[in-house]
Length: 342
Ligand code: ADE
Ligand code: ZN
Image (cartoon, rainbow, N blue to C red; front, side):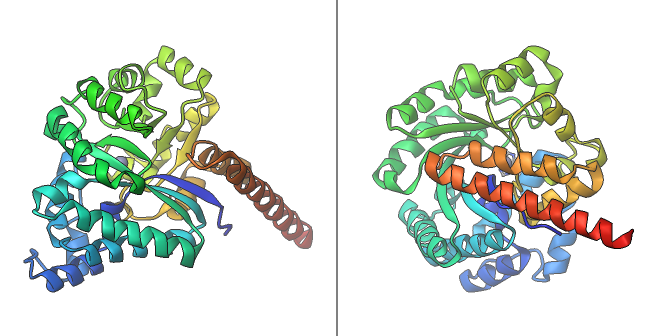
């Protein structure tokens, strides 16, 4: 099985909190969990929709208290990501959850910043942070969060919008996205995960986002498809997440192949790997198996991921060269195996 070099552009660091670390941090910080058996915790990760996931996800985050906790979480992700082929990670975090849990913002930035500094040098993964606003907490809370985070400006490269989508359209966040743009921050937003195409239009037209996170429901609107294709707007698709949160019935029915057929700049990502059954390499393996995507299509997706990343152009083209040589090696190995059989 090939390990593809890839950029992961849609992963929530809080969603990488594996059950084992959750139990360890609960003990460290004297937090009571419903059970301390990781297998039993995972057994409860059976979701009916986005909200049913968010309820458990936010409850688990009460175990994160100190800079050391955030450091351990961040370093653990980078080590696992590196093993799965990730060369570049643009990682979401949700400061509002932690502030509301009584954690000082400097503990979040110290811990995650330290993990990215040390983890980048030990694993070779180039990593940056994108700060998300929780759309269900509203635009005023988002504005306060951005103002509180500006003293830590050097720690993050962009802003995003996450949490419960339906009923919380992107347009409400116009002013805070304008402030972020004035600070030179990149702008992305979750849209079209559970919400329809209108949510994607608003993210594009009102927030001016550079990427759409998820975007699977964009397929319902042919005009939107034209816009996404012609403007080369990347979509950070998360196949295992979509199945676990019932946005898609079965992986075999996932719209990813249709998105690629339509010429969209689609990428594959893990979203919340501790909850949805796998990291980016697991997502790639699953779509290869269930959707029959061949190596050339996976190479296209990996190339898309580097094109869609906020890394510099010279670094992006080195990674894209690496995808090309990985494809050549994979095809060479397949051809040799074929000729040995005949
Ligand atoms: N926060 C963490 N994962 C999320 C998802 N899939 N959608 C919206 N908000 C999230
Ligand atoms: Zn997400």
